[in-house]
Structures are given as C-alpha cells and as structure tokens.
Length: 137
Image 1 (cartoon, one colour):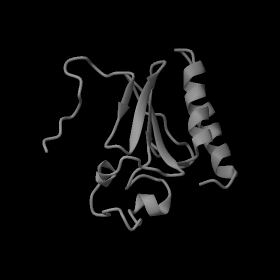
Image 2: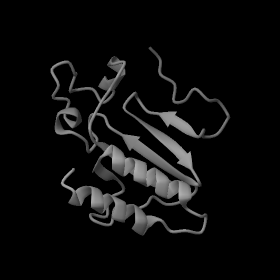
Image 3: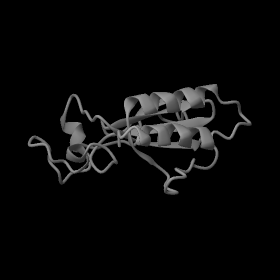
Image 4: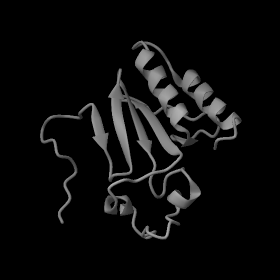
C-alpha cells in the first residue's frame, strides 16, 4: 500500500496530527508538542524494544498493525513552530523521555498559558524534573 506523507494538500500544518498510530502532535500558542509512544521512543521498555509477543520488533511502523497502541510513558519534543526546539536541560537532549500522562498534561497547560514573548524552557524543565523525581521514569 502506498503511503502518503499527509492527508492535507497545500493546507500547511494543521492543529493536530498523528504519526504512524504511535503518537500525535498539537500546535498550541506558537509551539508544537509532539507526544510519541511507539517502538524506538523513550517509553516502557517492552514497548520501546517491541518485546510484546504480538509485536513485530523489526518494524518501526509496527503500531500500524493495531487498532489501539498503548504505553504508560511517552517521549515528548517541544519546539517553536517557526524556531528552535526546547532543550531538556538535564541532558541537553531535544526530547523529554519517559513522561507520564500527568507530565504531558502539565506541558500542554504550560504551553497553552504562555505569552508570545515568554521563554518557557525553565518551566518545561521544572515539570519534567518533577516527573523524574517522583520515580516515574
């Protein structure tokens, strides 16, 4: 089956998007938050490495074989739509790994309440570090 990059032609980037049935992105207030929870992402080990009996571990898009794809943790990337990616200051990475649903919800709340001139890097990292300090990574 031929796969197309997007269902939208010449419309620019929409407010919501899904990627290979293993995650989604949202554009909020000038930022894009990408929440991924599939094989290869920093998530539950059995999901990340495709260790479930019914999963083909050799395919990055194996999540497309399922109606429902699940993980307890997600990998998040936040970037300005017309700019830089926010850095995870704990390791200078572009992603925040092993995030709980509560952590992702707090990220979204922070982005939604930001003003255009705000630098939310410190607030995002504080949310993330709180997630890690609770032993949820």
